[in-house]
Length: 416
RNA sequence: GCGAAUGUAGCUCAGUUGGUUAGAGCGUCUGGUUGUGGUCCAGAAGGCCGUGGGUUCAAGUCCCAUCAUUCGCCCCA
Image (cartoon, rainbow, N blue to C red; front, side, top):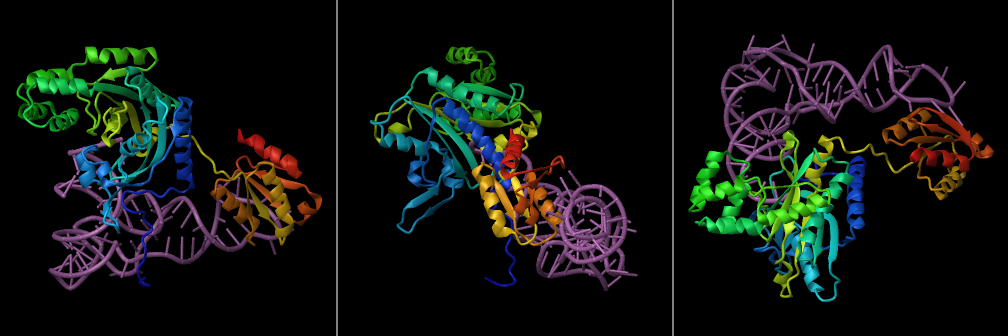
């Protein structure tokens, strides 16, 4: 490397470094999510970051695969892609063991995904996402369960119902209504147009709709209808019986091509951030693509970038401290003699970081404070010979003098 | 891929109609004698004004290009 070339400290475009304070937030968020998923009987799985391109062709959105993916040809001339989403991978896994898996099969995964896009608010090139899916239930119970799971996660993250709303639609119904109004182009394209309904003004939308179908008035009326159709009524009632309020939204289409029936999304109600947070739906056709008997499936994906925006803007991220409980500050040449005391604390379940540096004690305290460590323990020759140590609570400034066992107890009590 | 805004110290930002040694707050470092942080006091370090070109006697300031960041569009988590 050139000597005068300064390496950039910035992470690659659209990716993030996770310093410990960021990692704590991510871990907290996913720990909550993981707990809720497991409480509903979902089991964790994983798949490779690299997949053959074929896995996504004509299943995912075409734009994502063709223009928004990290893909390359490997040394063996295979076309490879860094996974832009999880659904095709999990469908492959289920198809591979179609016969021996037990249904209903509930699976979840938390992993990173890659899309080659222009980064902006709520959207990066690498993001983390929960995927939760239930396989083998064709009935409405599974749709309701998945929506309920999504809602439970929001509640477990302390979101209250004023902050978000759940919108549902049936792609089957939407398909039918498009066909009835005489489509002049591919169904997919009409879907795209409809999905953007809320973003453009009504006159413009009507114009575009007129280009797309023969009878745009009928379709338009359906899209803005805010009552309940027969198709939506049942699932809506069932959701409400389970304590979840959902809203019908007939213009909701979702971006992926594989959805076959119910689709839903969780929408941020904050006017500052009026956007879909995440969503999912039923995709009964994917597993069957692998040449096995089809398996009805419904699931959703929940990305960390939009979710984190939501949590931050609603002040829902708790204060999170480091894993380290105590900084052991050595005074003088006592390292070897201090080690057994550190080990004893560790044996008692305390996380101990030792500051060996030969510098003034106030500098050591400052370092501990900078790292957000709650306690400092002073260990010099006198303490070692007497077995009594001064523990300082760096939050309150209070000091206690005690033996190792009681010191550990004090630290443990402070945790709650 | 298209459009817009912004790049000055580690961070947040000032910097007048172009004018001499480039500013603040916060942070960092040192000191205010012995083994105790946050407050206070004194001092210090730290900038190729994103990068390259142009206009000018003179550019942080004006023009062009380029890169980066952010925000829209497309698409989506």
